[in-house]
Length: 221
Image (cartoon, rainbow, N blue to C red; front, side, top):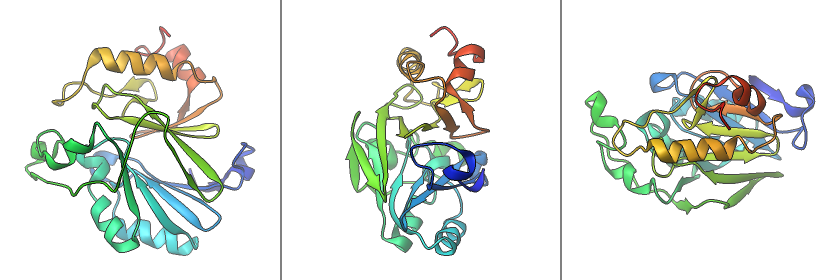
């Protein structure tokens, strides 16, 4: 989806919410720009920061937060540059905060980059939320892919990071994952309404009902 509003899609409660997806980051990770009332949040900052800034400027949006669904390099690569350029605050779950400074656990060592990222500005836990314009973003702790993986719920839309994909789920073999915790997290997500639209960290959008019926790893819930 490129720059569509909820009014165009007929989705409530945030029908005027601007959203754009950029899928050009490392490993084709999805970077989401969400805006309302001249304020914006970026969910996962793997895309080129200059491109993100250009979009924000074109939409007259001021970036307030950079939310990281987890601390792997393909989702955090340009968070620091974006924070420095826009003056935004970086948000991450408290259990993934240590991964930012560990090249093995943030997976940058896998690519020979050995990156150490600066600490986040805001550490959150399950049930916390932030407001951007008129949008409430609620954080759901979904460990398994990483200890501090989160999904971000905004009305009828869920940004699932690498916890849940269309017909797939996140890996648990990257150094800090857990099959058991991922299974529990998937069970929790499957309790959401079928109509919830899912925007994952990689690949196309889906919805909870479709995944419950068709995802071989989530369909038991």
